[in-house]
Image 1 (tube, each protein chain N blue to C red):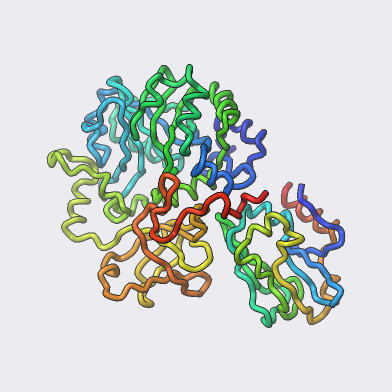
Image 2: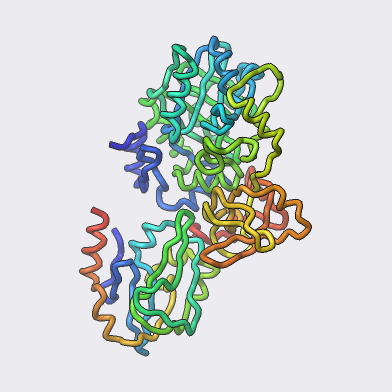
Amino acid sequence: MKLRTPLYQVHLSARARMTGFAGWEMPLHYGSQMEEHHAVRRHAGLFDVSHMCITDLPAGHLPLLRRLLAFDPATLRPGRARYGVLLNPHGGVIDDVILYRPDEAGYRLISNAGTRERVLSWLEEQGAGAVFDHREDLALLALQGPRARELACSTLPRELPPQAMDLPPFGCCRRGEWFLSRTGYTGEDGFELALPAEDAAGVWQALVGAGFTPAGLAARDSLRLEAGLNLYGHEMDERTSPLEAGLAWTIDWEPADRQFIGRTALTRRLQEGIRLGRRGVLLEARGVLREGQLLFNNGVQRGRLTSGGFSPSLQRGIGLCRIELAALEEPEQDWAVEIRGKRLPVRLVEPPFVRRGRSCIEGLPVVGPEQMTRGDKK
Amino acid sequence: MSNVPEDLRYTESHEWVALQEDGTVRVGITDYAQQQLGDLVYVELPEVGQNFVSGAECAVVESVKSASDLYMPVSGEIVSVNEELADSPELINQDPYGQGWIFEVQPTDPGELDGLLDADGYRELIEGEAG
């Protein structure tokens, strides 16, 4: 039996194509993932992300959180959220999470659906009798796009907390069981909204009525890839160091006496030297990049794609890769990817590819609606 | 519901085949196949003049999520490919039996066409897959 979110019937009524994801039955798309992708970049899209794992912790759990997280939660002021990682003692990534501190009363941790069992048992194990509140009674929506906040605030003025429109990036607040943050996974502005499961269908319909386009997991993946955001199980896992997955910026080394789990292993790793790094890959020829494809510099294999796909905004194959950093120092930079036995030229770039509706790649603009063909002619 | 035109032949791997007046056959993927794949973003076409035996991999269609091989429905030589698809692979989504055709073959043995599914046979196949 697959798990279903409180919006399952709503998705079926909207003729979503459903897919299995981490034990859940989730909408893949509602007809065209391209249209959904563009709706988020240009206007406003609505995602059901209720499969994600929400855990509430009282304020007294701060010492535990300071041991579990690679960033220092003591730096988190009320009304703020922060992205970071949970590490195992070997310095591998158990999960990437966002920790929220809506007010003085406590913390909320949102972790991935695919790591649910692992994260919950890790919390139990490390918490030694501490009490966690797993919020299976909540739905979680992502409202993303340049018009998402404004449309949400004008559609749900009585339900949302009064300070909703003024939330800064990575700000969060709550009103009763309605919990709002200015976060997302698309590279666009927007909110994530947790709310009681029984209210989810009504709110979903109201937001769609106000102009939000329902968007599925397929668009969520192409948007996060364009935004250069890691996906657990692809760019990182328990055998990958955050230092080699583009996540060094999420780690707080100060104060030096904070002994977070994984610190010793990471320190040793730093002393030995970091050999691998994360980069973005842009296919210069026509085609689509895929996870697992190999990268070559001057004919020598130097890396591998950890995620790959097609960028609807740039109309190019794009991906994220893990490569040998030493290869970047070589005088001759001539990179290629192998696709079905053929070597095709690629450009290595610093992610993101697209952010806030604009291309971050020199000489490659985001295609406008008038030039847009794929999926838009219908 | 998928559109399955009566006057075409079909393969179990979801290609459609149309016998044309000059004896060549035109090949594409079915409406059902394009729905399953979702938005197509890239097509790797065979080259004109290439010969393939029936069942050989001869082209690739890629959607954002996956790449799928096309199999040669009858043995023969590629005599034409739909160059429009290089710039507009979405034609396959929009018009799989018309502007979204993929290539044309001069069959070695036109009798091979009789071994393909007719519309009823193909409908049965996809109903079985859906169920």
